[in-house]
Image (cartoon, rainbow, N blue to C red):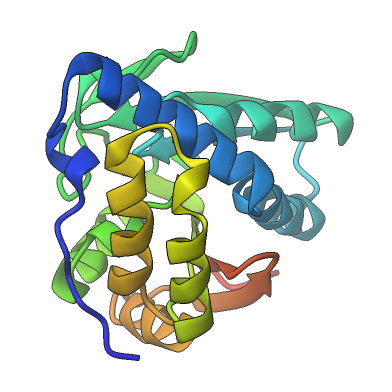
Length: 224
């Protein structure tokens, strides 16, 4: 199934303020019901198992309302790890998070080199074109001390059919459009892995998860 880069309505906030907030609420449900949260937690668990840290700092890019990083904080606490999160998004109206937040361009992260242990994103990579993924990965690995974590959708025909069938679940017309567009513009694990390698990490790990999700970890350094 060929990748098709269809513009998503939420990317340009193409709706009323109420429609945008409803679409963000739909995204929270998508992550809770269809593997988004569990995928991020699985990636974080891999980091914890590798380095056994007592504390970590994480920059969540395209964080929206911080569902994924907030879940990560609770998960880390259960593993006796203090996780400090900063949210990052392109628009202040998306950032109703209750945690430190910054607005800016993900391709030019406004942070010093190695400012965070981890840079993470969920349902963001498919919004980028191939060359932009490489640029983002290079920026993320510059800002990170340990790794870039990517949680995203798998593009295939069955997933696309399920996205069409699931459209009535969503309250926002933006989500009903974007849920299908997201699958069509997503990457396969092999495609994303190849793009991440161009950013020259020490190692890339990719795993598949529940309901057409996959997680990628681009490690900055080799395991000791």
